[in-house]
Length: 515
Ligand SMILES: NC(=O)C1=CN([C@@H]2O[C@H](COP(=O)(O)OP(=O)(O)OC[C@H]3O[C@@H](n4cnc5c(N)ncnc54)[C@H](O)[C@@H]3O)[C@@H](O)[C@H]2O)[C@H](O)CC1
Ligand SMILES: [K+]
Image (cartoon, protein in one colour):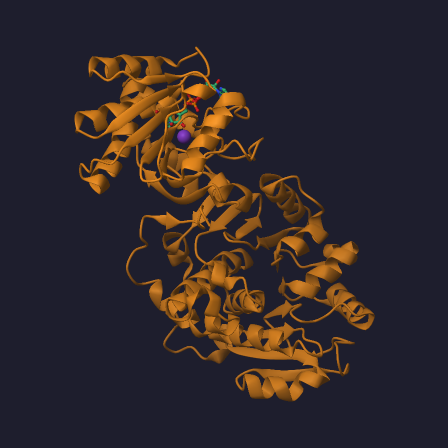
């Protein structure tokens, strides 16, 4: 699914109005009616008090339209105008009058003493600020937003939670409405998926408000949300007359004394994702462990007993996954550096491989084009330096990926794959995956996909999707707490099967807001 910027959505708005020869208020009526329909189909007339807070721009206008429809359908609704300015938008004013014509007189809120009582059993609609937010909410408006948050009522945000921008960081994290549900217009916004801003919403759903499909289809975006629909076309079926030689020979390099498990997880995940053959290259101490742990994986041992000391192998791998459990001991560091300088095979690098690259940045120049790096935030910071916020982190990652022609998977709740100035935001996965070894499994899976002929970007995007999906299916049996990295491997097959099963549900659960 495409993720548009706020600017693109305003443009779509303009084009739709012009092309269809409609008034902007018609678009507002349509958008807000979608919000009404969403609420009405769930509440079915239930007499629960609904508080609709409207700003003075078009987001507020949406709130006024919604208030009118709720009222006309007999809901127990109170509409408030959060009167922080007299610069009311035209469509706000039009709907303000329509509301009065419908015999509803909204309550004007002009300061702190005028906040209504909200109980936790009420429903709040947040239509204070939308895409037009241009600075941090201050003073009593900020206090009102906190009053709404403190009430802990089920809160539905129109388009975006007030205080959040679509594609940049809020100026004040205390001045953001916490939404249980965001009913967002036409397309999700980037801020819904990044850790610092995604935490302000629990779920989101897109309402199609009828913006010009031609414009939306033709407009190039730099951000995409990756779900089943996006990965299905990447899937390459296995051929009847194929043999293991058709699916590549992966080499996994890593491990050290006490961390051979990382390589066995990566090797097994690589095979389970479909690689034809997998060889593990590990220090001598791991030889028997690995042979017993994963009999399908072949093993070559390094001359180093407890850690890798000199990377030399007598085979021609299709792809190499390197780094898990490897350590950063001097000898290993030298061996890795020498390997990187001479290697020409496609690479996937994680963990200590990334730490060594961060310490010896000149090695980055020697990486093959489209090498895949899979850093967690700490590893990423060592590579690209500190960032000011999540959006800056992605900008810096884009610049770094461009400089060295890399595919970078920024791991997190919504892992983001960065390549050629574009962002691919993953939708699968769950907090159970925050457990030792799950990164090793991901490295193995991406390596296994490249081994079969997927290009590195596809392998990263598809691999991240399957990794999360496997864990999502697994937690039905294991719980979040009980999920082990090896369970993710056990469910990779189910994740493949699931590609051809029922469509994804429309509601997207984010991590809990009231934890
Ligand atoms: N194309 C669509 O998606 C449609 C969107 N609709 C809705 O319109 C809003 C955007 O409306 P806009 O009038 O541009 O902005 P806001 O309602 O967010 O209000 C901005 C308003 O507030 C002032 N302002 C901004 N920041 C602050 C602040 N910190 N403190 C005080 N005042 C502030 C600003 O100057 C403006 O006056 C979109 O989100 C949708 O909800 C349409 O209804 C349908 C088509
Ligand atoms: K809002």
